[in-house]
Length: 427
Ligand code: EPU
Image (cartoon, rainbow, N blue to C red; front, side, top):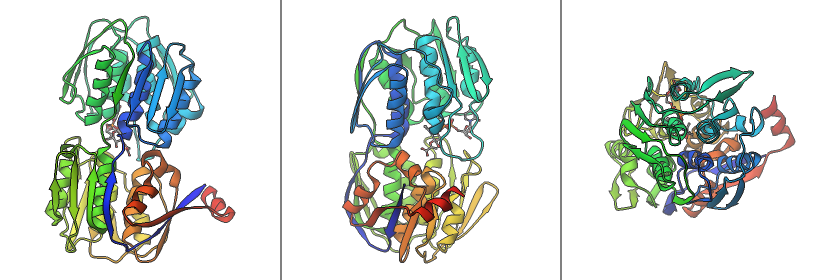
């Protein structure tokens, strides 16, 4: 197992290419189950979640070829193999196998998903949707059993705006009989991306990207080719890094309006940003003002950027308040930031940051993916060397992180953890 070593304090300059969106990729790969022939998806991020999903599709009989940024899936020989344990538990997005397998085979057994521990992450809205479509859903010893004689379109109102439930219901509904209407749907760009793939496969979907999605079921779906949208959270992470330690950094291959909420907040802090068609230029600004942020569903400020943004706020003048309304307990990075000298306290669902602190390199642990991103930002800012363990979380979602940062001039490298360090992690 590796750890990340960062020698902080180096100003960064240059261009970083943003990869395809993780949270699209992890839904698009299961969506291929619904087709009857080859599906090719490109602009894939090179992350461990993608590898895990590719293996899962092989487990159920799929013919899968994964070459760096492209995957080709032939679902012709897939069967509804029960997946109660094993790889499914390692990633949150394995819940998309429920919708896709239910849609295709009318039955599925999927272990309850793992993924980042951000406090309670129920899937009641997914299940409510499957039941409305006619499935019988039971939870037996930590696995969800789904079965339907047939799936029939229904009107489903989501009590909570959920990315996962919106996509999962779309997956189950595209081959159902009749029309499904999802009300109070999530509007994230990744939902549009999944709808685009399904539409290329022959599905009939209207309204993706708004809060009402209409799906007219079809009997079969064909293969297709699809290119994934850029990862707005990876882009946002590099924007935060550029604002923290950049001289002049270009964030390339992005869709700027996907990161508008972050652009607005960085500008409010005093960061200079030039917006072009598919890239942003972020200029060095030494004095930054503290700002408050509140995470909201898209197009509000994304919860996934709240953690790395907190590290940036340790450098801003005055007091800033970060409130997470999506995941109330997404603050596991704060203890680690404090270890590095940050002056932050958590009160309820808010972190209160007293800025203008000098961070010091320390041994810290990433408890989840975006906590890892927060520690990378802090490590790049800190005096001395920061050692970040828990790299397996970061590898789930950031493609070629070390290479991209080295390309900008950062001193960052991976090192094998010693036996002693591994023992400490286990205990
Ligand atoms: N929720 C429910 N019931 C449900 C589903 C969700 O109460 O059935 C609640 C959640 O507990 C949360 C809120 O609704 O408070 C929103 O959750 P959502 O379902 O939208 O989250 P998700 O689909 O499980 C995706 C991303 C997360 C991202 C959230 C919010 C994927 C694989 N994951 O999760 O990404 O934080 O949307 O935008 O798409 C990450 O990339 O680091 C990450 C955690």
